[in-house]
Length: 325
Image 1 (cartoon, rainbow, N blue to C red):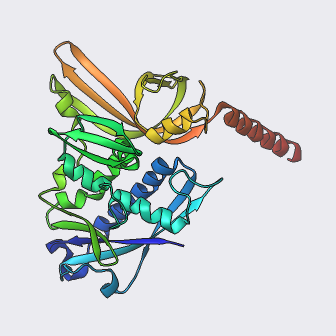
Image 2: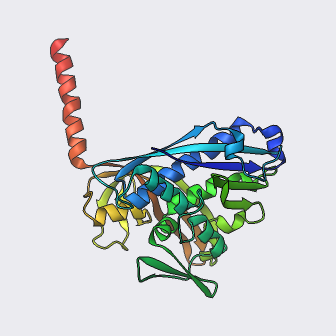
Image 3: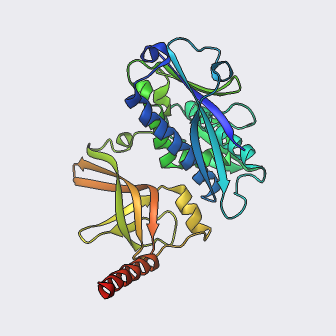
């Protein structure tokens, strides 16, 4: 079974219902990675998810507002459970995936809670002033003197830096001239509509605001492979990582990684190697240069045992090759 949804882009850049492939490619990658990351956060990596573009009749998938300056794309999403029933729901995969898409704001209906996109619009580009648990598995989010109650799953998505980063990438076309609006819809019902004027509400709160005491010299995210020097004994402490030439302390912002670690689903030890998306900021202040690191997402993990096993296999292959030559 599969769940489906559609995304439409509107604006003069879509004249003739077409778009330059170099603009469309990155958008599709961001969409696929966003869905995969959201599934990992909600289901704690107990299932895998794939997103495929599919062609359907325009009358079925296009919103009522579709014009000659628009492009409509339809997607099929399939989820496969690995090692048991996922944490999110206990029903068939299509129902599970439909609800995941509703939590993101890609499908309409079915959820009493605000979707993630709706919550981001409500926050208005601000970070929540306070988030607290209320009865019935809901969370109360406070911002700009008001409050709203949302699903715990939506809060989990809100707190995940990788999810937020991919939403920012998905909406990037709205920051370019020629694209005026992006819609997400299913079965003729619009789930989310975001235009050029409101796209700024969905960006992550800038770290520069928090670092107004100095000049930001570096603010970038890049892929690194680093060894674990020290695993913190409390979730809010920094992870110490390093290589032969450096050692850094970093905040762990990958909530899915922390959840798996705390639930005992995976174990980590000094000497293991993590492949991570590392966000680094360097700020020049009155007292000197301050550098901060944060792990946005853990992409891969190689334990010392796996590394030793691979080394043994490589050595065995070399010995075999030397014997037979």
